[in-house]
Image (cartoon, rainbow, N blue to C red):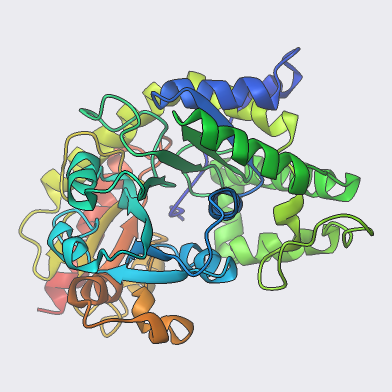
Length: 407
Protein backbone atom coordinates (compact mmCIF):
# COMPACT_ATOMS: atom_id res chain seq x y z
CA UNK A 1 0.00 0.00 0.00
CA UNK A 2 1.31 3.43 -0.96
CA UNK A 3 0.29 5.95 1.76
CA UNK A 4 -0.92 9.41 0.79
CA UNK A 5 1.54 11.10 3.13
CA UNK A 6 4.62 10.15 5.08
CA UNK A 7 6.74 12.49 7.21
CA UNK A 8 10.39 12.76 6.27
CA UNK A 9 11.35 11.44 9.67
CA UNK A 10 14.47 9.35 10.14
CA UNK A 11 16.84 8.28 12.89
CA UNK A 12 18.81 11.49 12.37
CA UNK A 13 15.71 13.45 13.32
CA UNK A 14 15.27 11.43 16.48
CA UNK A 15 18.93 11.86 17.38
CA UNK A 16 18.59 15.61 16.85
CA UNK A 17 16.49 15.71 20.03
CA UNK A 18 19.71 15.18 21.97
CA UNK A 19 21.47 18.22 20.45
CA UNK A 20 22.77 20.35 23.33
CA UNK A 21 21.51 23.89 23.85
CA UNK A 22 19.00 23.74 20.95
CA UNK A 23 15.85 25.44 22.20
CA UNK A 24 12.52 26.77 21.01
CA UNK A 25 14.08 30.22 20.64
CA UNK A 26 16.78 28.94 18.29
CA UNK A 27 14.15 27.22 16.14
CA UNK A 28 12.00 30.37 16.06
CA UNK A 29 14.99 32.40 14.88
CA UNK A 30 15.86 29.78 12.24
CA UNK A 31 12.32 29.75 10.82
CA UNK A 32 12.24 33.55 10.76
CA UNK A 33 15.62 33.73 9.02
CA UNK A 34 14.57 31.19 6.39
CA UNK A 35 11.43 33.26 5.77
CA UNK A 36 13.24 36.56 5.40
CA UNK A 37 11.75 37.88 8.63
CA UNK A 38 13.33 39.34 11.76
CA UNK A 39 11.22 37.64 14.41
CA UNK A 40 9.49 34.31 14.95
CA UNK A 41 7.29 32.74 17.60
CA UNK A 42 6.33 29.06 17.88
CA UNK A 43 2.92 27.88 19.04
CA UNK A 44 1.40 24.52 19.89
CA UNK A 45 -0.69 24.75 16.69
CA UNK A 46 -0.53 27.10 13.71
CA UNK A 47 -4.14 28.11 14.33
CA UNK A 48 -3.25 28.88 17.96
CA UNK A 49 -0.81 31.39 16.50
CA UNK A 50 -3.61 32.83 14.35
CA UNK A 51 -5.78 33.08 17.46
CA UNK A 52 -2.98 34.89 19.30
CA UNK A 53 -2.50 37.25 16.36
CA UNK A 54 -6.15 38.37 16.36
CA UNK A 55 -5.98 38.83 20.13
CA UNK A 56 -2.71 40.78 19.89
CA UNK A 57 -4.26 43.03 17.25
CA UNK A 58 -7.17 43.57 19.68
CA UNK A 59 -9.76 42.94 17.00
CA UNK A 60 -13.47 42.44 17.64
CA UNK A 61 -16.27 42.61 15.06
CA UNK A 62 -13.62 43.19 12.41
CA UNK A 63 -13.95 41.71 8.94
CA UNK A 64 -11.28 39.10 8.22
CA UNK A 65 -11.04 38.14 4.54
CA UNK A 66 -10.23 34.51 3.76
CA UNK A 67 -10.33 32.35 0.64
CA UNK A 68 -13.53 30.33 0.35
CA UNK A 69 -11.35 27.24 -0.07
CA UNK A 70 -8.97 26.68 2.84
CA UNK A 71 -8.79 24.88 6.19
CA UNK A 72 -12.03 25.24 8.15
CA UNK A 73 -10.14 25.99 11.36
CA UNK A 74 -9.18 29.42 10.05
CA UNK A 75 -12.74 30.86 10.02
CA UNK A 76 -13.40 29.00 13.26
CA UNK A 77 -10.68 31.07 14.92
CA UNK A 78 -12.10 34.23 13.35
CA UNK A 79 -15.56 33.56 14.80
CA UNK A 80 -14.21 32.43 18.17
CA UNK A 81 -12.34 35.71 18.61
CA UNK A 82 -15.50 37.69 17.95
CA UNK A 83 -14.74 38.67 14.37
CA UNK A 84 -16.47 38.17 11.02
CA UNK A 85 -15.14 35.92 8.24
CA UNK A 86 -15.56 37.28 4.71
CA UNK A 87 -15.06 34.67 2.01
CA UNK A 88 -13.55 35.26 -1.43
CA UNK A 89 -13.63 32.77 -4.30
CA UNK A 90 -10.42 31.20 -5.60
CA UNK A 91 -8.69 30.94 -8.98
CA UNK A 92 -8.57 27.46 -10.54
CA UNK A 93 -5.12 28.23 -11.96
CA UNK A 94 -3.44 27.91 -8.55
CA UNK A 95 -6.26 27.47 -5.97
CA UNK A 96 -5.38 30.81 -4.35
CA UNK A 97 -7.62 33.80 -3.71
CA UNK A 98 -9.10 35.42 -6.81
CA UNK A 99 -7.71 38.95 -6.77
CA UNK A 100 -10.60 40.47 -8.71
CA UNK A 101 -13.03 39.05 -6.16
CA UNK A 102 -10.81 40.37 -3.36
CA UNK A 103 -11.23 43.94 -4.61
CA UNK A 104 -14.98 43.90 -4.12
CA UNK A 105 -14.72 42.22 -0.69
CA UNK A 106 -12.69 44.95 1.01
CA UNK A 107 -14.64 47.45 3.11
CA UNK A 108 -13.84 50.02 5.79
CA UNK A 109 -14.28 47.23 8.35
CA UNK A 110 -11.61 45.00 6.77
CA UNK A 111 -8.70 44.58 9.20
CA UNK A 112 -6.95 41.38 8.06
CA UNK A 113 -6.53 39.63 4.71
CA UNK A 114 -5.53 35.96 4.98
CA UNK A 115 -3.55 35.25 1.80
CA UNK A 116 -3.24 31.47 1.62
CA UNK A 117 -0.51 29.74 -0.38
CA UNK A 118 -2.83 26.81 -1.08
CA UNK A 119 -1.14 23.43 -1.63
CA UNK A 120 2.19 25.26 -1.58
CA UNK A 121 1.41 27.52 -4.56
CA UNK A 122 2.68 31.07 -3.95
CA UNK A 123 0.05 33.78 -4.09
CA UNK A 124 0.91 37.31 -5.24
CA UNK A 125 1.32 39.16 -1.96
CA UNK A 126 2.50 42.38 -3.59
CA UNK A 127 -0.65 42.49 -5.70
CA UNK A 128 -2.79 41.85 -2.62
CA UNK A 129 -1.05 44.67 -0.78
CA UNK A 130 -1.71 47.03 -3.69
CA UNK A 131 -5.36 46.00 -3.79
CA UNK A 132 -5.70 46.49 -0.03
CA UNK A 133 -4.33 50.03 -0.40
CA UNK A 134 -4.42 50.58 3.35
CA UNK A 135 -1.46 50.13 5.67
CA UNK A 136 -3.90 49.52 8.52
CA UNK A 137 -4.99 46.23 6.92
CA UNK A 138 -2.78 43.39 8.14
CA UNK A 139 -1.80 40.93 5.41
CA UNK A 140 -1.28 37.43 6.78
CA UNK A 141 0.54 34.93 4.56
CA UNK A 142 -1.04 31.58 5.44
CA UNK A 143 1.88 29.33 4.57
CA UNK A 144 0.65 26.22 6.41
CA UNK A 145 1.46 24.07 3.36
CA UNK A 146 4.76 25.76 2.54
CA UNK A 147 8.39 25.24 3.53
CA UNK A 148 9.70 28.36 5.27
CA UNK A 149 11.36 30.47 2.59
CA UNK A 150 10.52 28.11 -0.30
CA UNK A 151 8.52 30.46 -2.55
CA UNK A 152 10.81 31.91 -5.21
CA UNK A 153 10.78 35.52 -6.31
CA UNK A 154 9.24 36.75 -3.07
CA UNK A 155 12.45 38.16 -1.52
CA UNK A 156 11.34 36.78 1.80
CA UNK A 157 8.23 37.64 3.78
CA UNK A 158 6.05 40.04 1.77
CA UNK A 159 3.05 40.21 4.07
CA UNK A 160 2.96 41.73 7.53
CA UNK A 161 2.85 38.28 9.11
CA UNK A 162 3.66 34.74 7.97
CA UNK A 163 2.01 31.64 9.44
CA UNK A 164 3.53 28.14 9.17
CA UNK A 165 2.28 24.74 10.31
CA UNK A 166 4.39 21.75 11.35
CA UNK A 167 1.77 19.06 11.91
CA UNK A 168 1.23 15.69 10.16
CA UNK A 169 1.13 15.95 6.40
CA UNK A 170 2.93 19.32 6.38
CA UNK A 171 6.25 19.88 4.58
CA UNK A 172 8.15 20.49 7.82
CA UNK A 173 7.12 18.06 10.56
CA UNK A 174 7.57 18.52 14.32
CA UNK A 175 4.66 16.32 15.48
CA UNK A 176 2.42 19.38 15.76
CA UNK A 177 2.91 23.09 16.11
CA UNK A 178 3.28 26.20 14.04
CA UNK A 179 5.07 29.51 13.91
CA UNK A 180 4.36 33.16 13.20
CA UNK A 181 7.07 35.32 11.63
CA UNK A 182 7.06 39.09 11.17
CA UNK A 183 9.22 42.15 10.63
CA UNK A 184 6.92 44.28 12.76
CA UNK A 185 8.72 44.55 16.10
CA UNK A 186 5.76 46.17 17.85
CA UNK A 187 3.45 43.36 16.76
CA UNK A 188 6.06 40.80 17.75
CA UNK A 189 6.17 42.22 21.27
CA UNK A 190 2.38 42.10 21.55
CA UNK A 191 2.30 38.51 20.27
CA UNK A 192 5.11 37.46 22.57
CA UNK A 193 3.39 39.01 25.58
CA UNK A 194 0.06 37.35 24.77
CA UNK A 195 1.68 33.96 24.20
CA UNK A 196 3.79 34.10 27.35
CA UNK A 197 0.81 35.17 29.44
CA UNK A 198 -1.75 32.73 28.05
CA UNK A 199 -0.02 29.92 26.11
CA UNK A 200 3.00 28.99 28.14
CA UNK A 201 2.40 25.90 30.25
CA UNK A 202 3.20 22.30 29.33
CA UNK A 203 1.70 19.66 31.64
CA UNK A 204 3.69 16.41 31.86
CA UNK A 205 0.83 14.42 30.34
CA UNK A 206 0.78 16.70 27.30
CA UNK A 207 4.51 16.25 26.86
CA UNK A 208 4.08 12.47 27.09
CA UNK A 209 1.35 12.67 24.47
CA UNK A 210 3.64 14.45 22.05
CA UNK A 211 6.43 11.94 22.62
CA UNK A 212 3.92 9.17 21.95
CA UNK A 213 2.82 10.84 18.72
CA UNK A 214 6.45 11.21 17.68
CA UNK A 215 7.14 7.51 18.07
CA UNK A 216 3.92 6.55 16.27
CA UNK A 217 4.75 8.79 13.33
CA UNK A 218 8.33 7.57 13.26
CA UNK A 219 7.14 3.96 13.02
CA UNK A 220 4.57 4.91 10.38
CA UNK A 221 7.33 6.56 8.34
CA UNK A 222 8.79 3.08 7.78
CA UNK A 223 7.47 1.50 4.60
CA UNK A 224 6.63 -1.97 5.96
CA UNK A 225 4.95 -0.66 9.09
CA UNK A 226 3.06 2.02 7.16
CA UNK A 227 1.78 -0.52 4.65
CA UNK A 228 0.62 -2.84 7.41
CA UNK A 229 -1.14 0.02 9.19
CA UNK A 230 -2.97 0.98 6.01
CA UNK A 231 -4.07 -2.59 5.43
CA UNK A 232 -5.48 -2.56 8.95
CA UNK A 233 -7.17 0.76 8.01
CA UNK A 234 -5.41 2.71 10.72
CA UNK A 235 -5.80 6.42 10.08
CA UNK A 236 -4.96 9.78 11.60
CA UNK A 237 -8.19 9.57 13.59
CA UNK A 238 -7.07 6.19 14.94
CA UNK A 239 -3.78 7.72 16.03
CA UNK A 240 -5.71 10.54 17.69
CA UNK A 241 -7.86 8.03 19.56
CA UNK A 242 -4.76 6.19 20.77
CA UNK A 243 -3.44 9.37 22.38
CA UNK A 244 -6.74 11.01 23.38
CA UNK A 245 -6.49 9.64 26.91
CA UNK A 246 -3.35 11.70 27.39
CA UNK A 247 -5.14 15.03 27.16
CA UNK A 248 -3.82 17.85 29.34
CA UNK A 249 -5.64 18.52 32.59
CA UNK A 250 -8.11 21.37 32.82
CA UNK A 251 -6.54 24.76 33.61
CA UNK A 252 -6.12 25.46 37.31
CA UNK A 253 -7.52 28.55 39.00
CA UNK A 254 -5.79 31.61 37.66
CA UNK A 255 -4.88 30.06 34.32
CA UNK A 256 -6.54 31.34 31.19
CA UNK A 257 -9.13 29.22 29.47
CA UNK A 258 -9.24 30.50 25.92
CA UNK A 259 -12.79 29.71 24.80
CA UNK A 260 -15.16 26.78 24.97
CA UNK A 261 -15.20 26.47 21.17
CA UNK A 262 -11.44 25.93 20.85
CA UNK A 263 -9.17 23.18 22.18
CA UNK A 264 -7.87 23.56 25.72
CA UNK A 265 -4.36 22.76 24.55
CA UNK A 266 -4.11 26.08 22.68
CA UNK A 267 -2.82 27.23 26.06
CA UNK A 268 0.13 24.83 26.01
CA UNK A 269 3.56 25.78 24.73
CA UNK A 270 5.72 24.47 21.93
CA UNK A 271 8.25 22.09 23.50
CA UNK A 272 12.03 22.33 23.18
CA UNK A 273 12.32 18.75 21.93
CA UNK A 274 9.95 19.62 19.07
CA UNK A 275 12.18 22.59 18.24
CA UNK A 276 15.19 20.28 17.99
CA UNK A 277 13.32 18.08 15.51
CA UNK A 278 12.40 21.21 13.57
CA UNK A 279 16.02 22.36 13.39
CA UNK A 280 16.96 18.95 12.00
CA UNK A 281 14.16 19.18 9.45
CA UNK A 282 15.31 22.64 8.36
CA UNK A 283 18.83 21.37 7.72
CA UNK A 284 17.58 18.95 5.08
CA UNK A 285 14.63 20.97 3.76
CA UNK A 286 16.37 21.98 0.52
CA UNK A 287 16.82 18.32 -0.42
CA UNK A 288 13.24 17.50 0.58
CA UNK A 289 11.88 20.42 -1.42
CA UNK A 290 13.93 19.51 -4.50
CA UNK A 291 12.59 15.95 -4.38
CA UNK A 292 8.97 17.13 -4.09
CA UNK A 293 9.42 19.37 -7.10
CA UNK A 294 11.04 16.57 -9.08
CA UNK A 295 8.17 14.20 -8.28
CA UNK A 296 5.60 16.81 -9.26
CA UNK A 297 7.22 17.44 -12.63
CA UNK A 298 7.27 13.70 -13.27
CA UNK A 299 3.58 13.44 -12.34
CA UNK A 300 2.68 16.27 -14.70
CA UNK A 301 4.57 14.69 -17.58
CA UNK A 302 2.80 11.35 -17.34
CA UNK A 303 -0.68 12.55 -16.32
CA UNK A 304 -1.30 14.40 -19.59
CA UNK A 305 -4.38 13.79 -21.71
CA UNK A 306 -6.21 11.59 -19.22
CA UNK A 307 -9.96 12.09 -19.69
CA UNK A 308 -11.56 13.83 -16.74
CA UNK A 309 -8.28 14.61 -14.95
CA UNK A 310 -6.62 18.02 -14.56
CA UNK A 311 -2.96 17.71 -13.44
CA UNK A 312 -1.53 20.02 -10.82
CA UNK A 313 -0.17 23.23 -12.32
CA UNK A 314 3.62 23.57 -12.39
CA UNK A 315 4.47 27.01 -11.01
CA UNK A 316 7.80 28.56 -10.03
CA UNK A 317 8.24 28.62 -6.28
CA UNK A 318 5.60 25.97 -5.53
CA UNK A 319 6.48 23.23 -3.06
CA UNK A 320 3.63 20.82 -3.97
CA UNK A 321 2.27 19.81 -0.62
CA UNK A 322 0.72 17.53 -1.78
CA UNK A 323 0.53 16.97 -5.56
CA UNK A 324 -3.09 17.94 -6.24
CA UNK A 325 -5.15 16.99 -9.28
CA UNK A 326 -8.83 17.47 -10.06
CA UNK A 327 -11.01 14.55 -11.14
CA UNK A 328 -14.41 15.16 -12.72
CA UNK A 329 -17.20 13.15 -11.06
CA UNK A 330 -14.73 12.06 -8.39
CA UNK A 331 -17.33 10.80 -5.94
CA UNK A 332 -19.71 9.32 -8.51
CA UNK A 333 -16.80 7.29 -9.91
CA UNK A 334 -15.66 6.32 -6.39
CA UNK A 335 -12.25 7.31 -7.68
CA UNK A 336 -10.41 7.34 -4.34
CA UNK A 337 -11.92 3.99 -3.36
CA UNK A 338 -10.85 2.48 -6.68
CA UNK A 339 -7.32 3.82 -6.21
CA UNK A 340 -7.20 2.34 -2.72
CA UNK A 341 -8.32 -1.03 -4.07
CA UNK A 342 -5.19 -0.90 -6.22
CA UNK A 343 -2.95 -0.20 -3.24
CA UNK A 344 -2.84 3.61 -3.45
CA UNK A 345 -4.09 5.88 -0.68
CA UNK A 346 -5.20 9.32 -1.88
CA UNK A 347 -6.78 12.26 -0.10
CA UNK A 348 -9.44 14.91 -0.68
CA UNK A 349 -8.03 17.83 1.29
CA UNK A 350 -10.07 19.96 1.33
CA UNK A 351 -13.39 18.45 0.21
CA UNK A 352 -15.53 21.44 1.14
CA UNK A 353 -16.05 25.08 0.25
CA UNK A 354 -16.28 27.06 3.48
CA UNK A 355 -19.43 29.07 2.61
CA UNK A 356 -21.22 25.78 1.99
CA UNK A 357 -20.59 24.48 5.51
CA UNK A 358 -23.57 24.92 7.81
CA UNK A 359 -21.85 27.05 10.44
CA UNK A 360 -20.44 29.46 7.85
CA UNK A 361 -23.48 29.85 5.60
CA UNK A 362 -24.62 32.98 7.49
CA UNK A 363 -21.39 34.66 6.36
CA UNK A 364 -21.70 33.70 2.68
CA UNK A 365 -22.09 36.57 0.23
CA UNK A 366 -22.89 35.54 -3.31
CA UNK A 367 -21.52 32.49 -5.10
CA UNK A 368 -18.17 30.71 -4.97
CA UNK A 369 -18.17 28.49 -8.07
CA UNK A 370 -14.41 27.79 -8.24
CA UNK A 371 -14.16 26.88 -4.57
CA UNK A 372 -17.17 24.59 -4.91
CA UNK A 373 -15.82 22.93 -8.05
CA UNK A 374 -12.42 22.36 -6.46
CA UNK A 375 -13.98 20.84 -3.35
CA UNK A 376 -15.91 18.35 -5.51
CA UNK A 377 -12.96 17.39 -7.69
CA UNK A 378 -9.73 17.70 -5.70
CA UNK A 379 -7.62 14.57 -5.17
CA UNK A 380 -4.27 14.62 -3.39
CA UNK A 381 -1.66 12.22 -4.78
CA UNK A 382 1.34 11.16 -2.66
CA UNK A 383 4.37 13.45 -3.07
CA UNK A 384 6.77 12.70 -0.20
CA UNK A 385 10.51 12.16 -0.51
CA UNK A 386 10.42 8.40 0.06
CA UNK A 387 8.14 7.95 -2.96
CA UNK A 388 9.99 6.37 -5.90
CA UNK A 389 9.71 7.23 -9.59
CA UNK A 390 8.36 3.73 -10.17
CA UNK A 391 5.58 4.35 -7.67
CA UNK A 392 4.69 7.64 -9.38
CA UNK A 393 4.36 5.79 -12.69
CA UNK A 394 2.20 3.15 -11.02
CA UNK A 395 -0.06 5.81 -9.45
CA UNK A 396 -0.43 7.66 -12.76
CA UNK A 397 -1.04 4.48 -14.77
CA UNK A 398 -3.66 3.33 -12.26
CA UNK A 399 -5.47 6.67 -12.46
CA UNK A 400 -5.38 6.49 -16.27
CA UNK A 401 -6.89 2.97 -16.30
CA UNK A 402 -9.68 3.91 -13.90
CA UNK A 403 -10.66 7.08 -15.74
CA UNK A 404 -10.34 5.66 -19.24
CA UNK A 405 -12.60 2.80 -18.22
CA UNK A 406 -15.29 5.30 -17.22
CA UNK A 407 -15.17 7.57 -20.28
